[in-house]
Every structure is written in structure tokens, then in C-alpha cells.
Amino acid sequence: MHTPPGNLARTRFEAEAHTYYDTKRNDALNLDLGHTDGYYHHHFAVGDFDRSILTFTGRARQQAIATELHRMETRQVDVIVDALTPLDSRARVLDAGSGRGGTALLLHHAFGCHVDGVNFSTYQNTFARLQADKHGCADTVRFHDRNMVDTGFADASFDAVVTNESTMYVDLHEAFTEFARVLKPGGRYTLTTWCRNEAIAPHSREAEAIDRHYRCHTHRRAGYLRALLDAGLIPYQVDDLTSRAIPYWELRHESELASGIETAYLTGYQSGRVNYIRITSRKAEL
Ligand code: SAM
Image 1: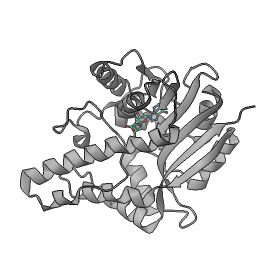
Image 2: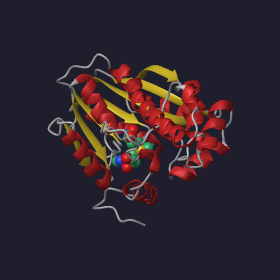
Image 3: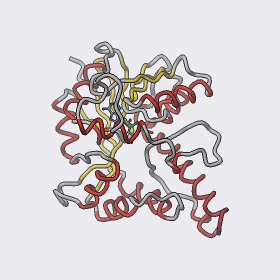
């Protein structure tokens, strides 16, 4: 296993996730496939795709699919932007589990705000810093080699916290307690994630396949609400985006870059055993 620096990864589970992201150099779906916008994503998408591209053949078809997948991933960040709107340009935002920086950069471009990305992958942080530099915002969008459950930031130092598909790597109580600690009173936390829908099926073969594939742990839907409330984060907007998450997987299934996990997401979402959700919470004022 790849050895993480210091104590960034504290458990075997964290060390495996760290290895997965820190050594993932050639994830074809995230390579620069002709897009030059400098936004690199390790998350999926909601919304429909341009179905006319499926009439293309050969290379043109595959190029069009790759471009469309990237466009959809970029637009997915709007789900978080919408939840945080309005946000002052002087606001400070924590992006926990910040990947290669796409979400943090798009949040900065939407609001002009300061963003601190936290990631235990030094490789991804180095990559993300380079993108911030290319976008000319390296002084306001910064990336830190830290564990998101122990960020080291001061109490009440952030106006907002976001996690874009990264909570499947943490203990929710531990992470949400940390997010509540660093949030100012009245500050907001928005998350997007897939989860198990225990109301339909306590166990889901799709979630198990996803967990094996991404070395993660797909939490239960109710587990999110419980852990938020226990941490003093009051959910005020809960959105089930499951049906809107399906087209992305249909398109990825058509891609030469498909990784084999597409069917698990598709059948998980179509059956309702797996959900895709956004939850926005506010830290209690007192
Ligand atoms: N949010 C990013 C995005 O939307 O592109 C990345 C999402 S990716 C599925 C999960 C990210 O969380 C990876 O960058 C991984 O290194 C990071 N991560 C997982 N567990 C972590 C932890 N305990 N502390 C810090 N980063 C973590």
C-alpha cells in the first residue's frame, strides 16, 4: 500500500482510499480529453445529455461522449452553487475532500469567494494548485494536505462547507462534528452524495459493488440526517436527485472509458435502492 505522509490517513480504510486517489494518475475519464477549461472532476453528474451525439459513430462518437460527460460534471457543481446562493465574495468556503480542484475553482468563479480545499492526497493537491495557478486565483483558492475530519482550521472560521461526493470516505459523525466546529454560527453546509435507501432495501448489491470499486462506504440515507442533527447542523433543504442522476450513467455506459461500475449505479438508481441526494444544513446560531 502507498504510504501517506505523517498521519493524514489514520486507519486501514483511510489508507486504502488514500492509495486509490494518490496513485490514480491515468483515470481515463478524468484525463484532458480535448477540454481545456482546467476543471478536473472526481464526481459524477445530474441532468440530461445531448442525445443527438448517440447518432455519431466511431471516433467522433467517443469524443462527443467524453466532451459531454465533462460538460455534465462541470454543470453538476451548479447544484452546490444554487444551494449556497447568495454568498458574499468575502465569504470563506471549505471544500472537504477536494479532489483535483474542480469544485473549489468553480465555487470561486461563481461567488468570487475564498476557498480552502482539504484533501489527504498530496498528488491531487499538487495538481489542484497548478490549476488554481492557471486560473489566476492561487491566492484565493488554496489546497491543503489534511484529513477532512481533523482540518486544523480555527473554530468558526468558515461561512460555508461543501462536500462533493466525498462523505463516503468518512465516519459521518466525526466529519460533521469537524464541519460544525469550523463553521461560523449560521454558516451553511451543503453535501452531494449517493447513499443507500434503507426504506427500500437495507442491503443493496449495487452499493456493495460501488464500495468495492471505489474503496468507500456508502452510508444510509437516514444516517446523513441523524449525523447532521447530532453535530448541531440543522438540515433545511433535502433534495432527492436520483432520477436526474441516471442519464449520466446511461451515457457513461456508452463510453469507451466506462470502468465497469456503470451498471451498479444505473440499477441502483433505477430500483431506488441507491439514491443521489443534496442536503443543505445550517449551523445553529447558539
Ligand atoms: N470533491 C472532489 C470532486 O468533486 O471532484 C473529489 C471527490 S472524490 C470521489 C473523493 C475525494 O476525497 C478524493 O480527493 C480523496 O482523496 C478525498 N478524501 C477521502 N477521504 C478523505 C479524508 N479523510 N480527508 C481528506 N480527503 C479525503
